[in-house]
Amino acid sequence: MEELTPGALPETKPQRPTLLTVLCILTFIGSGMNLFSGLVIAGFYDVFVEIVQEFGKKFNIPGIDQLLEARPLFFLVTALFYAGSIVGAILMMQLKKTGFHVYTIFQILLVIAPMYFMHLSSPGFPEMLFSGLFILLYSMNLKFMS
Image (cartoon, rainbow, N blue to C red; front, side, top):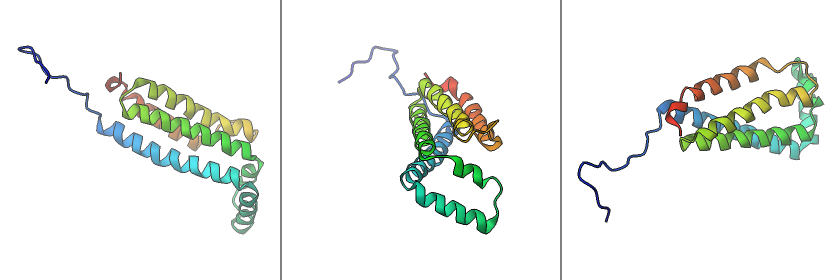
């Protein structure tokens, strides 16, 4: 049995903010789906190329050729980066500040990876927008992490 000294309060765990919980759940969903799809595409790359080519012809989607420039290694690497983002979110769920840094590093790598693998001159706007927004929202919760 625990002895309490007079006037001492039992130690309480810090409460995780709702915004942080929602952000982590969204990260688990988004990064988890991208992790899974990256592994599947890398494993079945030839089938993926056929489907993308057929889909591109049928619907005339601009920029679909850039997707075909990526090789299986791109999808494996990005899957690894998404796994890193999930690890960062898990650590932030546990209110560990290290998780924010892990998450941020992997999000930056995810923005840069297409430039390297697909020889793009600049990062994609949607990738920058979503990564930047999530990093900003996570940073607002740093005061609750240790």
